[in-house]
Each structure stands twice: as structure tokens, then as C-alpha cells.
Length: 271
Image (cartoon, rainbow, N blue to C red; front, side, top):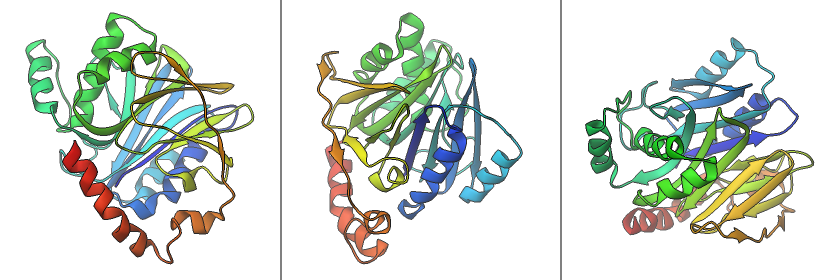
């Protein structure tokens, strides 16, 4: 179980996404990282170990950026190291991505990319996905179209969140058998892998359905399917108490995790 966070809007994005990660700590993790959009550049900071390790790094890196995505990782492909932590760049360092789930065919894709001259810095399937998206984006944009084409080449159960320095006010996300939730604010929008991370900032959410691509900008959210057709936005208003929401209706986090295991196993087996 990993944590995903993202924000675009007028406020300081780094503090918000870091707070979101803290609210997702119950999901478990062994490393964490953040991609910060600073004008037309992406700054990536990541550390293995406790979230406080990333926090210390952020304390030494002041920024007033208005877009950021962040991730807490539980290692699947690749050991829990700084290099394997998310986010990951593509080959051209024009995009950065974070990812929950598993890309089943990443070794085949990695071999295909290596034959084209791609070099990899990590042992993760996530970096392979980043290179695939970057390859598509290098052919043609916008970012959401590149993501749409790229995911047709991926097999597995995953949620991907992508940003590009060429489109610095946009976050693109896609869900395939791994949960993602959009939070709708007033002149700001955000996303997370679980609703509790959004509740301090908004009570209006959109739970992404399967194979849906979301495009977030500070003043709007768009949804489209895998063929590029626009989808309606179904807003849910959440009235839950924050502490109760974090436990998903269970008395303790342990009970929540126990009851979630069958769904997690089914998702993994379904691929």
C-alpha cells in the first residue's frame, strides 16, 4: 500500500502534499519523495526511510511552488533506496511520475527501451513507465494524450500521476485497478490515493473510475476515457469526521488493513 498526493493552485503546494503524505502514513511505506514544479523546471527530492527524512530535506529547500506531487513507497520492484524512491524522470527529464501498483510487462518494455539507448537510474517498474510516457510525449503532446497512448502499452494494476515542465500548471492522472481520488477546491484542485488526505482541504471529491484519465489545473478538472472522450464529473460531498474517515469505518487501522487485504490480493491477481 503506497501513498499518492498532488496539488495545483495558489497556495504553497509543498506543505499541502507533505501533509497529505502524513495523513497516508497508516498505509505503510519505506521511502518518500516529491516533485516540485518551479517555473519551467521540475525539482525532485526523495529519501529512503521515514517521512521525516524527506521533511528535513524540504526544510533545507524553501520554495513557494504552486504545483507538486508526492509519493510514499512500499517497495515492490527494487529495494527501498533513495534511487528507487518516487518520483522518477523520463529519459529527457521533461516529465516526472509517481505510481502505485505494478507494471507487469516492465521488463519487456525496459529491454525494448534499452535497445533504443535508454539508460535507467533505478530498478523500478515506475521508471520504465516514465520512459514510456516520455517517449510518447516526445512524439507529440499534450501530456494527457501522451499518457493515453502510453497506458495502452502497459499491463498491470496501477495508478499513475504525471507532470511536465512543458505544461507547468497541469497534473495528469490515470487509474487502472488502483484507487485515486480528486479533490475539488475553490481555485485549486488536488488528488490522493485515499479520501482522508483530502478532507482538511475540501469535502468535494471525485472518485476516479476504472481506466479514467484526469487532467487537473488550478481552475478546472477534466476527465476522459481511454479513447479520449470527455466524461462527466460526478461530485461526492464527504461529511465524514476526519479521524473516522482515516479508519474507513473500522475501530482501528489494523482492522482496516486486515479487511482490505482480500481486495488487494484480488487486484494483484487480476493484474
